[in-house]
Length: 282
Ligand code: ADP
Image (cartoon, rainbow, N blue to C red; front, side, top):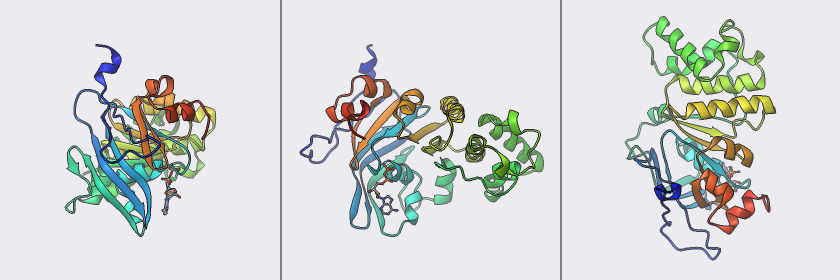
């Protein structure tokens, strides 16, 4: 079967804008999507920030969200674990389903949702605590461990998963704030992984880091996809090309195109995508 035959394109319901940018082609491998977004609109007060989004995000893949600043990537990412709920006047229409459950249904337990859908931010934000206590934090407040041994084991496993154990294993009780920027970001990844999420959202996780630290984060993302569903916002197109399997190109609150990363960067269906990935605007 040719590579492209395994991937289907579906057109968004709703009227096509004059630009013809309504096509949201979903890169679809076999199996069920982990996240299924349908006819989603998102408003900050009266202003619509996302329009008619239809995207399917598959497990054990890295899905990159690219597009110019202000096009709605972070808004979309934050809506996947309801981080936008705290914004006054924010409102979502349509549905976001994770494992076929609508995460905006009234019965949804948001604490449980955020445990399942972890998040790593652009600027690393370790707590002013020890390395150990940072990673143990979510396990303790969610009462996810029954003994000190289990806690120690989970902290160690998380630091190993985040490729940080070899650097900090012998100084777990020193301050997290003494770590380098790249180590702090990997610590935040360890903290997110400790509570065993199924999905990890990353909002420009390497944009504040030097090239070597960035490379480590990228290698880590690549490794983590074997166990998690990863969605990453990046304004760095080379990074999207390096780490992701699928790329969705956002523009003015819409998804112009979503397909295999290789296709988006070498042979996109939309002229607008081509213009963006070749640097004609951005
Ligand atoms: P991106 O991540 O692509 O840079 P954002 O999702 O941050 O885009 O922003 C999309 C649009 O929503 C922008 O016009 C931005 O100004 C607006 N926006 C983002 N956050 C808020 C907020 N908390 N309140 C009001 N408007 C917001």
